Figure 1 (cartoon, rainbow, N blue to C red):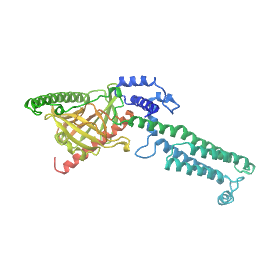
Figure 2: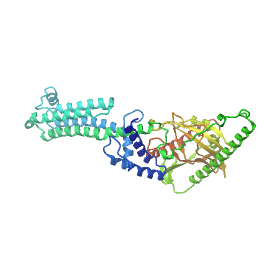
Figure 3: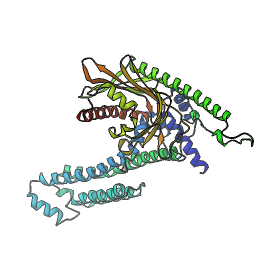
Figure 4: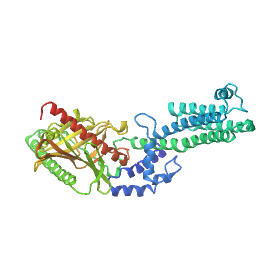
Length: 474
């Protein structure tokens, strides 16, 4: 990688750090650092990077989704189509209001065409732009301005010639004829402006971000200052003296002691996450984010200054203990009724309440958000008759980050199932979600999608409850 490419990658990462702003202090530091660096190569408007919302919109509009064209290119194609349809409509209006027989007028304009009396050539010029531009920019998806330059220059040259050769004194609708010529001129230049100043720069910006963030590895943390290096060594691989057997009683005892200490530490962390999640879900200060016809309510609030978390509350037709057992002891079965998960399994059981689990989430947003996997430290308990499963991300050396997936991070979250008096087959279900999906997607876009994902989840719970009821489980 040459020096310019490396600088470009580093600067793109600097801007990306502004978006991944779960830590307000670090986000502020990144923004300050960004103002001191040079402008990225090939971008003439460096001021737009100082507007985070505008840059997010540009990234979203310029990003291809699920193998399809970007939103800004799709709008350009619609604009070209509008040009052709609008020009054709104006030409037809000119013919209709002339007062002559429309059939004879069409024959005169098309069959007996002359540049001096017919305006049909303006429609054909628009049709030519329509075919050429859609061929190169919609079907072939080229990323250069030379095609639009040719069509615009050709159209403008033809219109200028048309002005001199057309016999304006014989025109029956002088004003509309002039308007048709001017509108064709303006639309052709509008297409050139939009492609050169919107489509190509926004798509180039999105490509550079993807390349800069994924050039080394998409799983590499964007917040480089906070990246940690976790190295684990197998003690069995160290040199052992000839008279000291590798699996001696002392070694086995030491390993057992270390394992016991590690388990105690995991249990302590799991309980802390449990207490924090349960306290958060019952805290005040929540704001209504979304309500559904089924009566479910999604709330949100900000914690750690700039980090947004979500809580959904709804009533489900399933006994709380049965749902608790499914989430606690039957974790491997969850993907069978929750299609957003591809895999769930227990990596380690610390004790009857504490375990470490692995979850692999399916792609989201039509392929925009690639699959994420999570390592969670879980704590499940029945407290005061309320069934609670809580968890948070944890580092587990035996399950390192996979090359095929982005390793996400969960803050303290929980599922809470509260029994309803006199209704044993129902419960109030609550889910506290605190997650960071990592990667290049701006957090504001992810936050918008999370509330919909939570509503989908509680719907899957209801569907599974209905299935269990039909099977006679309750």
